[in-house]
Length: 102
Image (tube, rainbow, N blue to C red; front, top):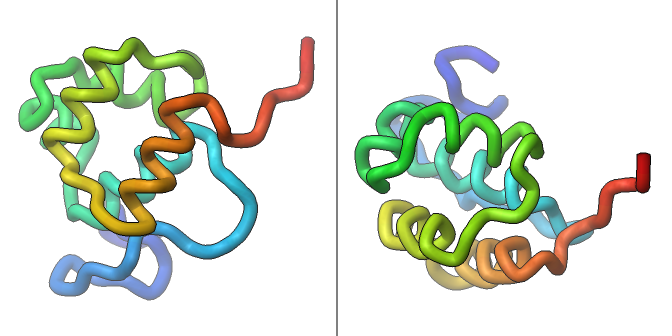
C-alpha cells in the first residue's frame, strides 16, 4: 500500500470507503473510513481525542468491543454518511462477522 492509501487511490482522491460484500468487523470499517478520509491513526486520534494506540488496537481487532463513548467520538471525527454510516453503525453494534472461538 503505497503512501498509506488503499490500492487505486492517491492522496488527491477520495473513493467510497465501503465496498459491497459481507459485513465487516468494526476494526475493518474503521480502517477503511480512516483511509478514505486521508487520515493517519495519529491524525484520527488527535481529531477524536483518543489515543493512537487505541485506534490501532481497534483496527487490529485487539479491542473488538469499543465503548459507546469511543464510538461516538470516532463517528464525530469521521462523520460517516450513507452506506458508510450504515456500515459503521452496524459494525459498532456488533453486527459484523464473528471471530471463531479460541
